[in-house]
Image 1 (cartoon, rainbow, N blue to C red):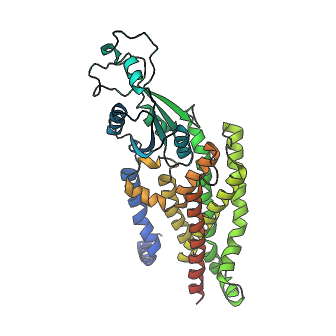
Image 2: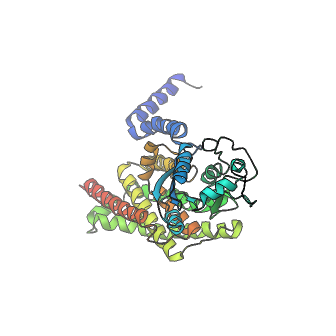
Image 3: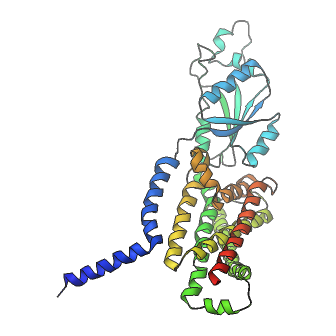
Length: 381
């Protein structure tokens, strides 16, 4: 017969074991808490304050008023003011901004000729074809950012001209770079490289040290003259090749199935991918020195993976997050690699364009490797 006393004894044992396993108990509490905060606070598809660059070729009171009206929409935030369109395009390639607002030198004449507002000035003017009064150039790889910029296309100018009315002529011309067809797969394919590498690289190495202990190999490693840093390096080298194979599979199938080809240099792509793989592997090694068993290692992997998916810009635009969430995202290697991989694959960005994020990944990899070696030495003591 089934004994209630024996069931209660097993129940008591499991509860005591959960209480003693602080890592598991912490994950029970933290995972729903983090999910609630991320989805309720940090994740926002209504994008505001998109970083943009201004090219004001008119430099007139009229153009300054036009800029103030655009800023009042809170869709964009002008972070740079450059003199030429070429400089603005380079800022987009470097991912410093997501869009450029170009005000032509003849903005006043375009305003007069626009049928939405030209009735006040039409007397004595020759009939000419209406043209948009200014132009937006945007990074169209992210469809949510592109949609936010396109929402400004027909922005009314009623505050500037009282009798402005809706017409077929748009207020602004919008040009989308890198993804004019607005296919979401163009943004997803390079992003998947970062997410899959994060998942596999951290998962493989997070259990590397605890696996040695569970298999009884730690005593052998202690007695050998090998140094902790040499152990760390030796453990991550095999996974570097695995990561490169995964990148080749993703980008190869992306080009074959979805026509998402690599626009930039393959050598630059290889270099920055190696930096990200090393950063992810070093993070996994640090987690491995913190965990006491493989289950805890897997739990900590999930703890890192979830913010990497939600905050790195893979699913939701980085610009749509509040400042606090952006600060957390900037601590994650996946956030920096997401900007890098999309820059190389979609925007033909060079190594110098990607230098800040690349240096951050290099520093993270070296710091993680050093911390893992130090913690491993302490455990040997």
